[in-house]
Image (tube, helix red, strand yellow):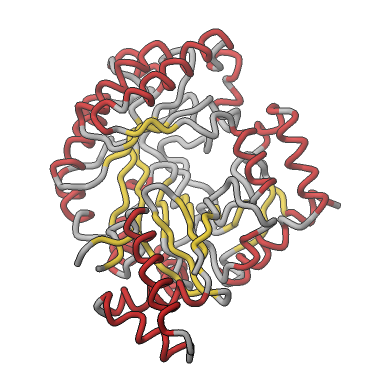
Length: 85
Length: 332
């Protein structure tokens, strides 16, 4: 999984922004969503992202992180913001 | 996890989302006022051999490009005037594009050749936008005296041959409005992914020639009906984009949610809105980060917001959009 061709990510104090330049739509991301995008940019395999997040945010509920990361990845795919690498 | 759409200039829920951003998301950069054409409707009053006084030098422009890269601005439009008359245009585009900035190039296509397209195709190019204001040379030349429609269409072909995304733009006047359906069909044939239009902006030459150029309300009704019909058809996969239709509509949207955009003039000054003359910063004397802070602050100024409301109420005010004044002096 990688960011689609016309999608740019920028980290912000509140998390980050994803900018789809073809449609000129901007998506504001909270810190955990921004962390997912950073992992995608770093080339982390999708299955490994929840574990990375769990470590980063010292989360106790691993299952919840996994569910949320999967849902967010699905949302990114549906919006055309990511494509398969 | 949330991903909230905050759109460039539209329908976000919280006021002034731009205050949360560390830098602009979009820089619209007029490289020059010089142009190889003198279009009767030109919003920047560009003409051959008439650059603005004290335009940014190559060195100053490259320095601004470095700031844009450092601030991680994701998207930049290079326009003019005609950007391709600027000797360092490609150098700038290559500096920005190689750093990963997504670029949109806005050109009249008169000197856009295959070699230029090939060089741009090596960069992260979002699109090349070419003005096709007619489908017959006679009408094209009336609106763009001295211009060649064949060259503009060849430029579109060069864009597509290099594998670059093509956008076509159409500025309606009394001269060309009847050719809209033919130009839309042409844009599809040329492989454009988007066709941009809207009402003629009452700025610059268009304002000076307003009574000769401005389409009638009846013409606009037919024009808009054609755009709606073509947009609905979705034919050829080409998007038809025509909202906000009038510049006042765009200003209303900006009042609800100011755009995360800096409009940079050829001399490095930063405008608050295309339809208004207020200048908020001078990039010759301040950093891009400072200009962004001043821009965000200006959108909290009740006096500036009142100026926008006046411009929404009276489109004749747009005619003064090129008579720049600093925000401080215009509020004094």
